[in-house]
Length: 136
Ligand code: FES
Image (cartoon, rainbow, N blue to C red):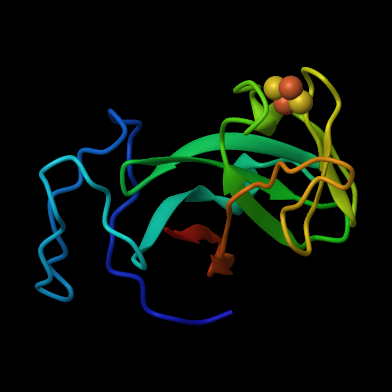
């Protein structure tokens, strides 16, 4: 896959510390609001073993990135919307992500958990020459 990504790899930071977008010049409302719609390199594809997830920070947003067994990538919010479970530690397959705390299942296609009103926020994630790029 090709594509230019200008953001350097990020180290974990305090969530919500992004202050603006040098790429667009658009100021975010408030000093603690993360910038939306920007692509961030969070690590390398090999940082996430096949069939597993890992937690990263992208632009001040905590995300969980998964590499499914078919090689495809998925990204969601890091904390479960039910009670804050660590979604990067969840079990996954091609169709769903299961939270490790109370086993709610969330569909990759829309983030919804059938039978509940809960839904995950999902993020676009791509492999750019081996770099994990998450758009938040
Ligand atoms: S915290 Fe995820 S299902 Fe309860």
